[in-house]
Amino acid sequence: MFILAAIGVLALLIVVHELGHFLAARWQGIHVNRFSIGFGPILWKYQGQQTEYALRGFPLGGYVGFPDDDPDSTIPANDPDLLKNRPILDRAIVISAGVISNLLFAYIVLVTQVGFVGVPVGVQQPGITIQQTTVSAETPSAAQQAGLKAGDIVLQAGDQELGASEQVSQQFTQLIQSNGEKPLPLRVKRGDEVLDLTVQPQRVDDTYRIGVVIGPNAIVQYRRPQSLGELFSQATNEYQRQTLGILQGLGRLVSNFSETADQLGGPVRIVADASRYAQNDWRTLFTITAAISINLAIINILPLPALDGGQLSFLLVEAVRGKPLPETIQAGVMQTGLVMLLGLGVFLIIKDTLMLIAPGSVP
Image (cartoon, rainbow, N blue to C red):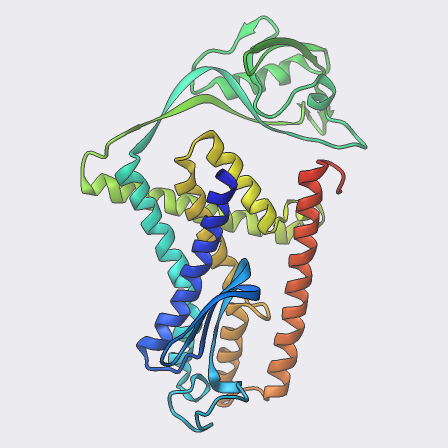
């Protein structure tokens, strides 16, 4: 059920993106001859007065087709309502409308979340949560050797209990530093079990680490927003937080690609992650939907061939030169970019599927 919900979220965001292109074109009176959700074999189609609407077998993308280069089109090549014959600004609006739609939709989702689910309030619980562990077959981290797992709650370290405090994460970090490389007993809650484990911190540069990402052990409760001002303020803050986090993650990926390339994920990982989070709490579907929508917008605006940003780059060159680049150059760049993009997509789908079947089997 949650997997279907995650697939539905991804398909919905694709519809939102393509609908932005479509409505921006129709609003300006530009001819549109195809509106397709998905790729591959046609499952359903409807021929409207001007546009063919289709639903295809693989809902992992979509496109809006224009008759500009359609050999079967009966529209004259000099028709002013063909996309290619419109001024640069008109074309830029159509191309950027998908990105704008995803950004607006993400904000609407967050406003809806605050309005119907409520304002999240964290209630502190004793201990710290192991959010992530460093896993490596070559050089196992201290946490890996000790048997710590993501989701574990550390209740006690040495002879110190970790209480319900906002400073508990800092307390645990200081314990690791003061302990040095000596074995440190831990009392850990895993599900309904309480385990006694021992971790031996490792020295890295001038600090001691055990190879985990930690966070406070808190449960989230919700309350109704007290006013419209708080509703929009909370949604705006979350929108800014998500956007900044995605931009920072993209920056780390670009600046340190060799170490972060394994974090790349395709549609399979998106569906798997969204399904897992939704299974724990269905309300996270709102947050996940907004995050993926912002992600799609940011990725699509990058100046890469076959993406919206690549087409906007061509328009910028045209505005500077006073005339467009030769169609052969544009077609060659776009086709090369499309092949590379499809190749990356296939690779990520295979990689993520193998990781789901046999975690750790793919480097």
